[in-house]
Length: 316
Image (cartoon, rainbow, N blue to C red; front, side):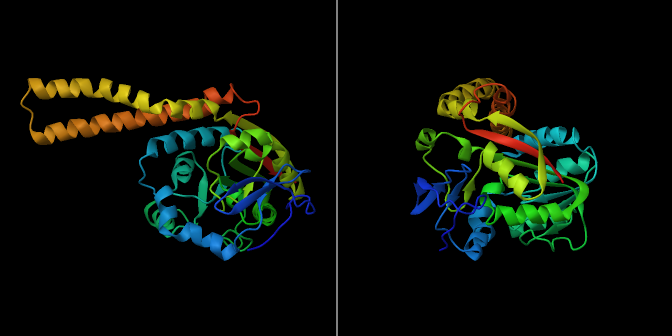
């Protein structure tokens, strides 16, 4: 275990603000950064992403494929406003959903992915160059990139300052850093009591607007824009999801069940109809999730609320 101070101001030990599974998250009084201290070794953290459990969450064949498609299209559309073409490195590429959309939009993709199943899928099935190793200055040897992208990776990085400095070095002179992360570190302290899970030490840091800009300034980037999306509508929706789920199932199944009683369909036809109904239901839930966060959440319920943020920065 390693004890650290704030990685941004390098002097503040912070005060305990969250705890989980014997791990403590401390908040810097200067930078508002939340950091886990003491924390496991780098080797222990890397093993988290190579084990079977991590593969469950990053399975390219997972059931939330439609949501990932919607999210990838939204992200690419936003990215195209700043850089419509070029080479792009996705660090922590997961199942390659973002990269598939990048390819179809004309970008030249590369990937870093620690999970073997996902890395094999990206390189062998998607035919996208992929390295199964932590990102550093030696990644892809002498290749430099127009864009470096990562999604929900920042909180997992063992040394965000070192990683961002390496990203800066791997970018072309006019390169862009484009990433998505949460704002938990920027929330008022009293709101953190409402969260029942922080996934420590899988998450080692929690940033907010202030600490993100400090990190960018420290590592040779200039902030261009932060697009914010409130998670509040989605969180409220999840409280009522069980009732909504029952209602949607009833609506979608009524026609199917009625047909069973009025026709002599084969068992295979009945099973097929039920499977189609389940798929429709799943797609409806995923569409609602996306709309609540990236459409409604882009306008409403932002102040002092948990958000996901898409950050755009350029290399200085």
